[in-house]
Length: 105
Image (cartoon, rainbow, N blue to C red; front, side, top):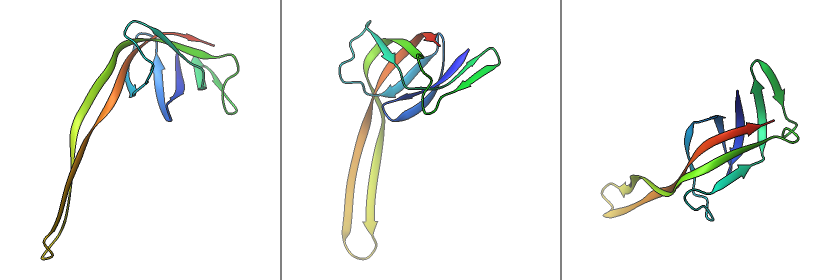
């Protein structure tokens, strides 16, 4: 059984027991459960239910494993040749690691 869920603007394929890195959830604490109710599709052993736009009554329950995980460092370097123009910038994206406990459909 799997489901397609929208979490913080991104779509993920989730299965029970699977761990995901999702965009940072502000109020997340380690060990707490989080519910995602924007379920777009549910596959229950070959029976596919597609929502319009979401499946009614379906939700995914997940547990927060790590509330703040920093992603890889990304360096953005812009340069215009022969103009003495250089700009260096960078960032690290913040994630929250969750483990899917159940899919209720």
